[in-house]
Length: 178
Image 1 (cartoon, rainbow, N blue to C red):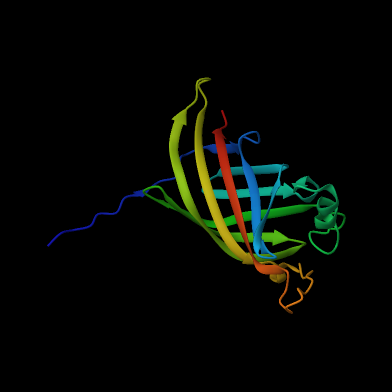
Image 2 (image 1 turned 90 degrees about the vertical axis):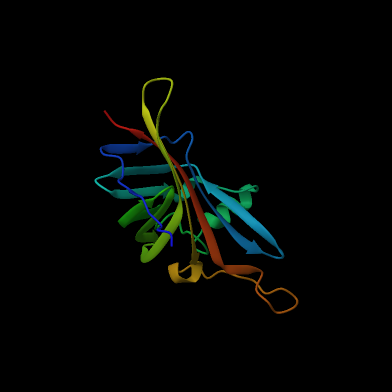
């Protein structure tokens, strides 16, 4: 008979701020037989007292075509004029070995819904400049229609061109504040 021991790690103490140069938030969605991807460059995030929070400016969404970028910022999708920021705040965060589970609230177009993000955490390291860093890679899948993003167009087969399921991925590099 063997015993399995699980190690639950405590979150690093202190306040951690996002390194925006090395961090990213992106999304992918099935579209007409392929996968459509986009990113947000205006990302803010912090980890303090066990709470992970972050936001992305809607006007920072980037895809391969400027016209499509404008469409994503329109009321058909994110509605950047009325809802300029996407947001997330955790209610519970746990790390077990390198696996991370984060429960929280995601807000898109002013609609807040509970979500669970899962992923991995890199242990703290000291960079060449003496700053302590941690890395988090987190994903979740949401139904975009839950957030009022209903735009679609039918294919000749009658099926929708755009899936309702969207995968959101965050790669966060966090730096400990002094």
